[in-house]
Length: 295
Image (cartoon, rainbow, N blue to C red; front, side):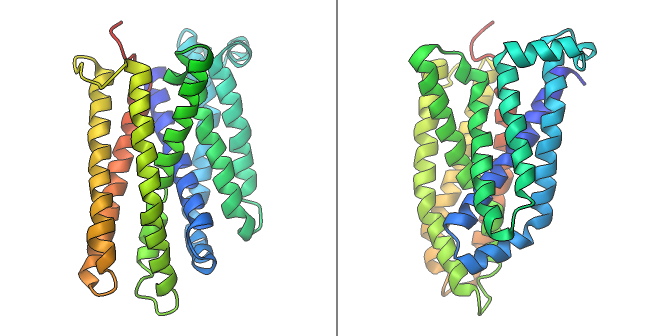
């Protein structure tokens, strides 16, 4: 495996892990009634611990991977001088240091009392996502345009994560609709998610358009370039997810109280969104490492 391939794999795992933590924690903290929120958070414990462990592990691996990329291959991956140069003299090193600090905080958050874990996880994972803008195409500009590009990247990942990262707890909330004790809270949580989704989707669209303008100056129409092909596929899949979300909100949610089939269809649609979201994260991890213009 080459360092470049390892970097793409690490990006995919880390981005997916932190998007899940941010979206699920923010949803359960802000939109789900407290009693149901605590139950879902506890039910997700094994998944959360595994995801936090993955995020920390990938962070540790990323520094030698990026040293190998910037140096002369794997031989430089664990070279002390190369590591020092990367950490002190490159934006990649600065971004890794940010990631390492907040990954350690994320691990510490798992030791907090249950009531504090949800909010703390949301805040720390949001900061980890914001740190992704310190490298990549957001660093291609200078001055105020770089600041604008990074801020737009932050909006894009936070709004997208608030949507797709919440899908697993949404599926668990759906399973509680038939519960006589939690059914009303579950329906409230679903309606709130659908309503907040309007804002998240709008921000994803606007920030995505702005990103295309800032990086390639318009729509990705030159499909001879791998970057623009993959970006086009990502846009198409995101639009498909939006169509599913719109159908869920206006076609299925209003029928939840009187149709059992609507609940099953909503669950299937949510699973479909999860699968598409995984593919989208993989595409972003890949084309985020490519040049948007001919070499």
